[in-house]
Structure formats: structure tokens, C-alpha cells
Image 1 (cartoon, rainbow, N blue to C red):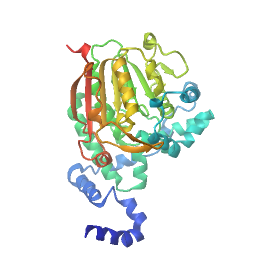
Image 2 (cartoon, rainbow, N blue to C red):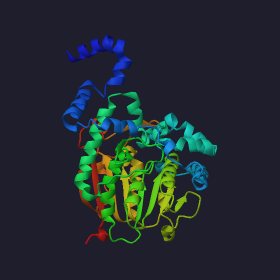
Image 3 (tube, one colour):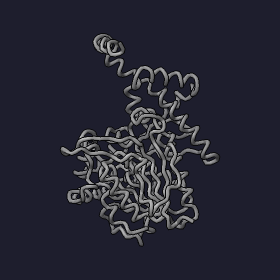
Image 4 (cartoon, one colour):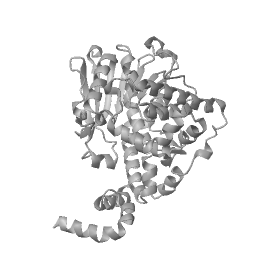
Length: 410
């Protein structure tokens, strides 16, 4: 009977009103009704509607960086580093090559960015990166998700508000007096206008993760953090700007993503000392000379044994094919001298790549060698968007893990 009703619906109402229905419905009808009901009964932030409008306005006119010579010089550095990385990428080992899922994302959404980077078109690169939170190439980096959803679906504002205040409430419970949120006006961000700032939804997640990461490093002089798959650099920025001590932060990603992260971090933290690919050797004894080191992912094997205090990964290990994530785990076992923290989904994927069946490794199976590392915790990660809960099946689809190297266990 249900199938008959669905068939009749597709042949009648949806056939006539499909575009209008697609613009209104959030995932499905029941979820749409639930989102509005939750807003009216629980969120009830009527005054937040103007804050959403203000948070999604174009903010580029408010950022006076264009005529700053030091600012404009970073685009040349980013282009040079990108092209050097792409030249080296042709000969890297298989596990470090771009997988089919990310390659599709690059092919479908990143053509303009790649053209500007490859052609060293500084003006076009500047135009794109100054607006990256609203450009299609940031869709896979979470940088543009809410912007496009808000444009496409008028009711998304209710879902956004519900999720924003849910995240903020959880964050306040953990952060206490440290619950002040900050986010730089770099890349034309979108979010809720809160306490005089635009705060994207993911900024709350970054702050929540930063509390856990920084608590592990207390008492360590000039710690070294390495984040694999750091996206546009939001987590790196939050940790560095929240820390009261000196940190060396290494961020590894594929060259296209790394270009966006390089811009975001160099524009938002101009006082920091940066090392980009091709600008100098990556020696552990020279880590203290830099605050932020931005390198392509295939540089990982060049890091020395036990030279990193904390490895981080969020929402990417479980997206990779199993051979790649296993290679990363093997390198982490060698390089990490203290902590390995990751937050990933627990769903098994199977897809075809070059005629072969490929699988990922679900998060509960992403385990470093038990002889070298001890698991300190595993718990459901609650800062999940509704679309993530739907796609990965349930509110406990994501888990947070912490492992500690056994030599450091008291």
C-alpha cells in the first residue's frame, strides 16, 4: 500500500510541483515538520531571525585587507607551494594518491580554483579565496554547506537554528567560563551573528574539540600538533588562537584543500610564522622556528620518529579507502610520541575504484597497534549535523577516540 501511495504521489503531485516541493522539503516531509516543531517548541529564538540574516550577509566590504602588501603577497606563496606539490604528486605512493570520491569532488566543484592556482592567476585566486565560504569548491570542506542550503531551501533556517543552539548549549556545559566563541572574518563566513561576531555552526565544533586537545598538552613545552585532513584550517585556527602557549601546528592535506587552508590561516593569523611546501626543509629540529607548517599529505613519511605530541583527525579517516587510512595509522604509530585523537563515523562503505571493490575502515576499527597505544576513551560525538545522523544512521554514528602511547602512560 505504501509503495502504491508513493507511486501515485510521484505521478501526480510531484510531477506537477516537484521543483517547489524540492525547495521546501528538508530531507523528507516528516523531518521538515519535525524541524519546524522543534524550533517552535524548544528553540523559540524569534530574535535570532535577524541574526541569521546579518550572519549570512556579504561581509567582504567589512574586511580591509585588499591593499595590504603583506596580505596580497600570500597568494603568490600559496600558488608556488601548490604547483610544487602538484609536480611531486605525480610520483607518490598509491596510499597517498587522491581517492575516487575526492577526485570526483575536485572534478565537479574545484575547476575554477585549480585553474587559478595552476595558472598562478593571483587576482582570480584572491577573488575566489576571499569568498571561499560561499564558493562551490568549499562544499566538501564544510565551508559552504549552510550557505548553499540556505539559498536553496527557505526552511533550512529553522534546522540551522535548532542545530546551532543545540551545539552551543552542549558547548557551554563543557566550556563553562571559556564559552566565548570567536571566528575570523576571513573567506566571507556565514553563520549566526552572536556577541558581535559571525559564528558558523562548525566553529562551535572546533571550539569543543580544541578544549580536549589543549587539555592534553598542558605542561608540555612547545608541543607539536599534526592534523591529517584539516580541511580549510578551522580546527587549527581555533586551537592556535585559544592556546596561551606556543605551539607548532602541522597541517597535512591534498594540495587543493591545502591552498584554501593556507589562505585562511595566513590571513587570519598574520603574526604567525609559516612554512609552506617548497619554502624550506622539514626538519624536526627546526619545528620551533615555525608556528604553522602547511604540507601536502604525502610528506607524512618524512616526519621523524616520535616527533609529534598530538595527532588529530576529524571526519576523514572513515571516508578514505582502507589502504590509505591503514597507511596513515602505521605512520602515526611511528611518529606520535604522546596522543592520537580522532573523531569519525562508524559506517562501512563499499565502492568501486578502477574496477576494484574498495572499502573504508569504520571508526571503531581504526585502532593503532595495542602494543604501542592504549585506548583512553571512546564516546559518541554529539556535535553531529542532522544530515550526518541521517546519512550515517543515528545520533551515535560518530565516535570520539583518544589513544596514548604506552611509553607515556604512568
